[in-house]
Length: 143
Image 1 (cartoon, rainbow, N blue to C red):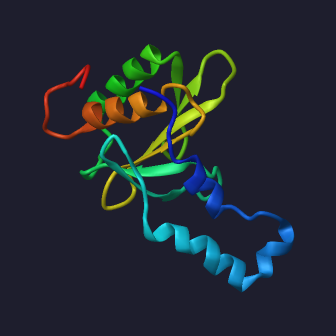
Image 2 (image 1 turned 180 degrees about the vertical axis):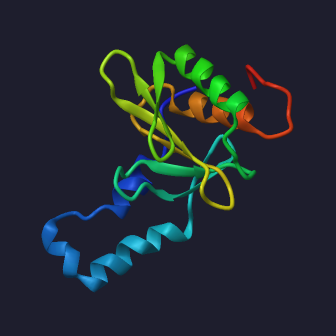
């Protein structure tokens, strides 16, 4: 699997310049792109991270953190050369340079995964996280 293929969609959401911040018509033009949202590996893109700007994908279930799934998350992170940083929610960061490549949030009516679009294994990480964190399912190493 590869990097995410949603770059053009993300770019269309961002301000082209600071001057455009007060331009209502430019805003309406940017939001027109949102009418058709892409998906990756069957997971719908539901927006961008407010502070990080990473694309956000919806998981098809409610996520509740437990001892078991946080341990599995740490094991998966290690497979991707990452460690887990626990803040308001878990972030996956590369050991080599501390770059954040993903985060998983549980405080909505469905779980969400934020991914760095340029990360070489982003799509694979999304699929693996979704299988790993699914409640009431046996552990799935590979989908």
